[in-house]
Amino acid sequence: MIIKVGHLNGEVKLYDLADQTSAGHLMQLIQSELGCEVQLVNAGESIAASALLGSESIYYVTVDAEGGKKKKKKKKNFAKPKKKKHRHRKVKLATLKLYTIDNKGTVQRSHKQCPQCPQGVYMAKHFDRHYCGTCHQTFRMDEATIRANLEAIKKQQAAKAAAAAAAAPAGGAATGGAAGGKKGKKK
Image (cartoon, rainbow, N blue to C red):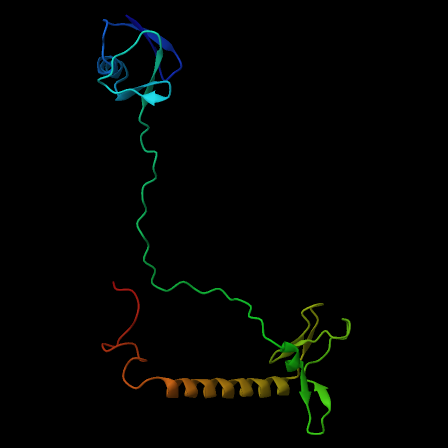
């Protein structure tokens, strides 16, 4: 019985085998030619080694591809936690921060208006400058005002630190643990 077999390179080879030959026998012949483990496929289905072959159809050779998967990487252990990204938080009624009301009941602007932009565009107030976010114009403050603003910022930070220290529980939890010492990677 002559059996047609389509090989990996596209050629169709003919094999002269005895009647009632199993697919396993043909697989062994092809494996000895190619030097690797093969399987036979007919009409899109894999053929078992114990199945009997018919002469009227073409059988195709397939080979298991080596290395299809990537090697699994080792999980990295980072020393520091992942940095959180800054997210803009919307403040309700933020325009109320732009105005202050006196004892007499008059409304005053607490932020400077930009002279180049249309009315209603206010400049950001930093410790050393006024800055317009629309037209990017910057006005620097004088040295005395900058020093006064820096002192006010330092007082606010000291008050926050004192409030945080008062709110921290007594014990050793805030200092970093019972053993003390440096934190970080073990060597």
